[in-house]
Length: 238
Image 1 (tube, one colour):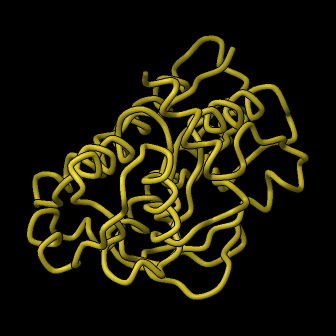
Image 2: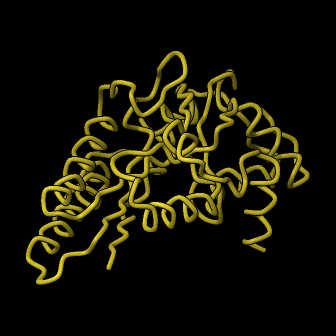
């Protein structure tokens, strides 16, 4: 038996105090309840696969980061550390625990839809300079890594669930615009921050996260490159 727990309120929203509480509780508290249920179960599952996020490393970091890199500081790192701490409790109960640190997920819904809608109206592109690095993952590879984590007993602990090929936000906007046939017009960070609040820092931050443990384990990506990843995501949403 196994448990997969990926629940959580959307990160891509304005971070009001109430939103931050909902974002945290829907992850940390829900994971605590899942592990509490595992503890009480007559037959405990063999493995718990749960979500985390590359926000573990912060928002603005220099250089390439892997699973051995130190966590960052601030709301997202504190959230991710508390989230993973609850999931790791399962290992103390004899249940193998795997945490997938998700990057920006390329797939129907979520961040991709928020980027596409204004771009269809010719009003969206990279926010700010466009030179910041974003770590992303195609939805099929989120599923692929989760299935691998379920089946492979050697997978345990935290794994960066991202493509090996991070891109700048300019590259992301340009590639997405090319795929849907729209230009990517740069958006100034100031007005966008008025709309999205602190969440805009995630979009303008710099995180070059590498999936070292997944690569070392021989995980084979469905969509490691951005263009086919976007094409597959849009086809799935058609």
